[in-house]
Amino acid sequence: MPPAVTRASAPRSVLVVEDQEDVRLMLVTVLRMEGYHVDEAQNAAEGLECLKAHQYDLILTDYAMPGQTGTWMLQEAERTGRLGGTPALVVTAHPELVQAASEYTVVGKPVDLDSFLQQITRILQVP
Image (cartoon, rainbow, N blue to C red; front, top):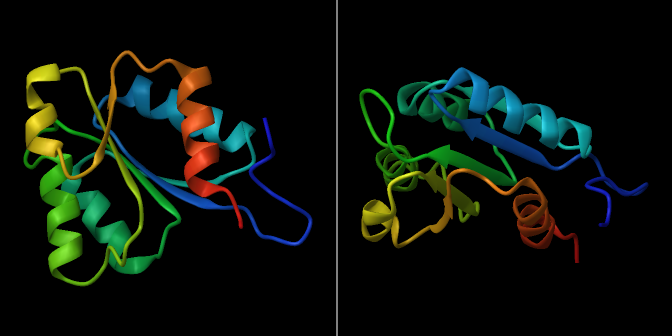
């Protein structure tokens, strides 16, 4: 698998928005081990604040969280001009909710880490 960082480039940045601490920690740890710069938020409101403060190369968000959903956060970021075409992956354990997130790439839980990392590498490949 190609590294997340090349000599000529800075680490690609990823925002992970996940309310379950153990899942968030696992995703953040794996992404950092792969060389990505990772910010994290524990709910959609915090994620939206991160999107207001920083530009990311990829957004990874849980769908169902207390308060608002991950798709609400992405729609708000888009509405306010904070998304800027940034690719987003919506992670969900609720297959029936795939329709609600149909405008985004959906990843099912539990996450298969090998496939997940390959997907992220494909999305973030530097041309």
